[in-house]
Image (cartoon, helix red, strand yellow):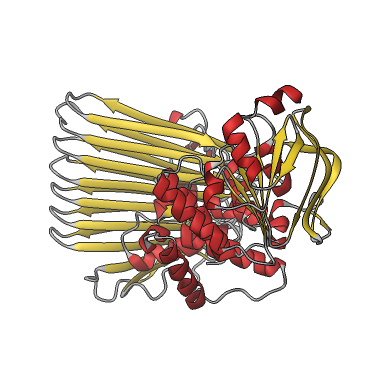
Length: 343
Length: 251
């Protein structure tokens, strides 16, 4: 049951629906009345991506078709771009990345809506070798009418490090899912997320981390703000398999609701089948603090600016965990722009 | 002498409960006036009504700064006109470094007054100078505003903001609370450095101790929502010796 299958077969019954427990807040079956035509090849130039200038190598997909391969294939910083360039059409793409043992990769991934109302499905397989280190930064900048599903399956070898930050402004319906097969064995995972949603946008960040062996670490922090009639979804599942002792897993999800009609649905889940583990989760949903807003206003900051400043600071805690300096600056400016602030 | 801050017959309620019941007070430019009074007299309410915090309703009377109606303005507009309230309990703002917060405030005030924003180098130079005078480690200004600061550090940060924003009229709400004697001296010196012929101050305090360091020109006693006595600095000493009993009974 995936969007990609439905796009390929034209069979709407293949779409995930609210009857699927893991999709109950991101119903595609109930939304999509018909599968749009397949996206045409698009050979014109596309606008520069958000990480332009930061990566030596670029892998570019336009309308689901790969355009360039990485120039050398061996760069430490690689831009991976998925551009949707045609209005109202559908495409799917799949890509696999193998990170050799003891190497480093910074993956600057962007999903760019350069047209309106498209359907996009992207599937990634990322295999991280022993002792290798990956930082994946995913910036999802979809059109308001787009339907977008991004699924990554991450396999870690012992001693690997995988750090991820997903930043999204949502779409008509959008799901960004990350599944991590965690071997324990001193592998280290950081899975972070930011969502900043307005109007009628929807974003779903779903993660599933399965700890299969002893001595694994996972740290998760997702923060979001929803305004107007937007809807944010966070589903975080950490599974600790029998025998995966000494697992240390922490998950936090915190959201601000800025409007009466906005909604956040959160489901943190810890499924623990091992002994002697340290697992914790925290989930809060609230509003901005009126006392802080008055304090800022008393110092001369107008209310709208005070709200944006406090909101940006709230999300900033996640953005600051991005290690790659250039990407962190891009993410900071992107969040500021979503909140109507110039950096 | 014309008054800078002029409060006439001010009545205010909180959740329909009358707290201020006809406060009349004039503070001329260049002077420091102290407001003393027992707990629950309305001291903090007065500071919040003047600065425009939500939840306080003015039912009668007026408050003007240099002839301009303060009560009609938004809190940030009052700040741009020069009203600064030093909070009894300064807020912590995680994720917003003190430097960013102050620069944002300063530039917002300047924009509201139709002035140019301050350039980054000039701002940093000013911040370094003022922080050194208040014995604030400059690195503290790069951390989230007031986050994890002690009571004394928070009060010093209030004075730093005051010095950077250079307001026309200062309201100090229980600035001495939570300060040890060394911090009290540093904070008082910071406030005294801001005394100027074109600046007025209202110092709200429960105890006379602060007034040994910030010497007032006039002392007023606020009890049960009204000014019940006014006098020179000697009035503060008298209150320290005799307590507020006679005013609370009279009120």
